[in-house]
Length: 109
Image (cartoon, rainbow, N blue to C red; front, side):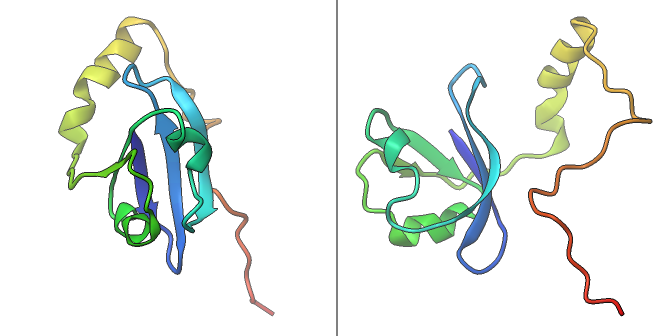
C-alpha cells in the first residue's frame, strides 16, 4: 500500500508498506512521472491512495497499480496506538520534531 499526500506541482509525499505495515520504501518527497514506483510495481500489486494518488493515476499505465479512494481519521489509528502502548514504545516529546521531507527555505531579508 502507498499513501500519498499532494505536495503541489507533480510532487507527492509517499511511502510504501506491505500488508503487515513493514516499510518497503521510506517516506519521501517524489516528483511523479510514468516510471515512478516501477521497481516495486514490477513484482507486485500496489494500492495507491490519498489526495496525491490522483496525480499518479493520471500518468501511471502499470497494470499492477490500483487506485482507491480511502479516507482515514485519527480513529483509525487506535489499534496502532494501542499496540505501541502495549509494547512500551513511547516518544520523548521534548526531543521529537516533525519530518517535513524538505528543507525549509526563506526569502526573508
